Length: 393
Image 1 (tube, helix red, strand yellow):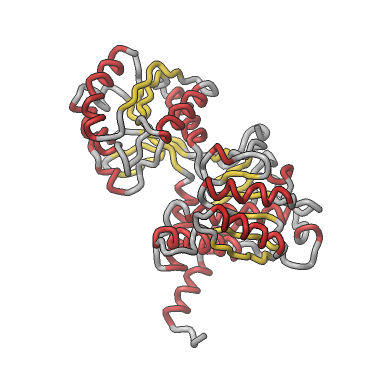
Image 2 (spheres, one colour):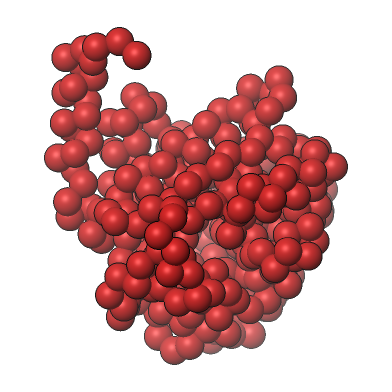
């Protein structure tokens, strides 16, 4: 190791100067965290935590995600004060067989809990091996099909977003909703999530329309979409499309076909602020979408930039949230700090995406803000809650 340069030293000072209040807000559980209970199981040794990442092959995008997740996890560890963690990193890539083998190795290495992997099919391979050893898994996946048993999901779920946006729409007198989804597996999952979420809110689904996932398919569906929107009595249109897919074309085409944001409240099930260019779409001005707590997320992004001279992707924040939850469980103490009971405490955890908690079915609940696109900028209409009301479901 060479002698630190002045640039290195200034960067470290910048990081340290940001820790105080930010670390306090991010690390404490949402409410009523017990005093320090020592290390896991009362041991004087650091707790071994396995971090399973999507790297390990020649795919540069997966390597980048793996690097970001590890960087964010280590930022969380730096905020933990007296909590000692021995973080063991395993690059499982996207090979389920390799993941299963490395899970067995991680358990042999003493892992008390497994964080990751990212992909659903890889998580399916990790879960059973970990279950045989009585070890729980905090997967970065957002695939509901892999949740349950000893597998808990950290990824953002359609269920959370749909519930938040529909609840807000109903509270604003915009609760008669038409679903507009693409004819893809993801679109079908999203539509089912919206239908189920509506049952938990005061909103009503008055119509559904879908389109083939192509430019020609959208164009062919537009007359039918417009006719249904006009005849259903819908006040809002909730779109499942993302910025990487059909959303830009829908934002341009719907107003030209008598489905205007002047007549209907446009709402999104995806993040309309990613990438930032989405905010410039004229058809989405005035549109609503849900997102993680912007204040906490902005703090994380600033800290990550200061530490690594790069902007993190949204996935990176899951690495911080996972280790923040692990640190909180260690702080809470007990002989089984990573038990299902510890994981599903009703007060949950807080990370850089805001407060979250795990349900016994392996799904998660996250507190989200509702925002509007106004003049090509994000304006928060309803802040993300900072605590949960009621118990875990």
